[in-house]
Image (tube, rainbow, N blue to C red; front, side, top):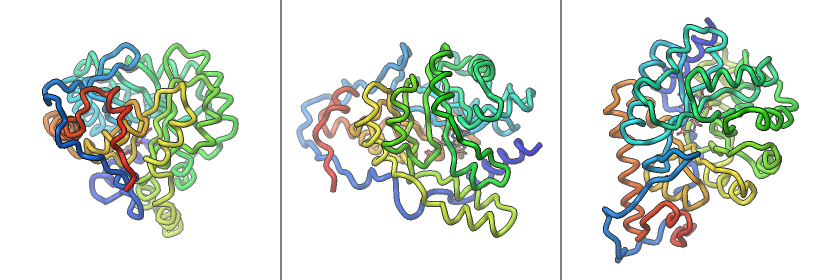
Length: 340
Ligand SMILES: Cc1cc2nc3c(=O)[nH]c(=O)nc-3n(C[C@H](O)[C@H](O)[C@H](O)COP(=O)(O)O)c2cc1C
């Protein structure tokens, strides 16, 4: 089936090729923390935990939405979910559209057997609201995997480049507003690696959504993934041309943080170390998402995913130690981050 083949292609390309932005980064390298040589705290008293809708996360980190719906997807999702359960982190599921088209694929998204306690975000493209999806379908996507919230992802660039893409993005703000009022779970809007602009953040302000994941540029380039998938030179050139299209994550985060005052804000897109996590939290994120760096480990084992996540957590802890900051609220309000 076309949708299954597409998902397989995406995973294989991400595992085999370098699909990251190559002209600019997420922008966190433009900032440095002013090291505090006498932090006056014990590293063991640092508390990295946050709360999300009543659920405690041991650190402000979640696995960003990736996959599901194919044989390999089940192993990937279970490994990611179990690692999150073991470490007390949250997880975003990959797009679940396939479960409505191929019902047998549902099991590949069901991870509650290995992750009974984690905060899970269900996921589907917002554009699907123009292709027959409404209240009933979104309720199903959340209930069928026992999720806590829903990510509606925005991916106009990817859909535009895909020959088979869904390209009618009209009137979605209105539909998102309507559904945010009706649905019983929190809705978050996320991009998929091109960032959220100031103008869009303003439009989203009155929709009733709970939050925004800026998912900015500088990490995984979906345009480049589609270039590798292209069946002809015309499509390949489109993907190649737009491979660096997007608002760098740090810039998108700063802008959204100024505008979306009453929203929960997540940052993802090119978060490649615990120092990036610390910088993102300082620039206004409540939590931070990581996708691509966890894909390969997730094809290997729970332990491989845990090792990667522990690396981020320890780097975050050391960053906070060297700044003398004991908690995430303290990290959020520190004055040590300087633009280089
Ligand atoms: C293999 C792969 C599959 C993805 N699938 C989805 C998806 O189904 N839904 C979605 O909202 N985002 C998806 N994304 C985007 C990520 O959630 C994230 O926003 C983006 O990759 C930026 O993070 P990164 O630079 O850490 O990869 C996917 C990313 C990767 C690498």
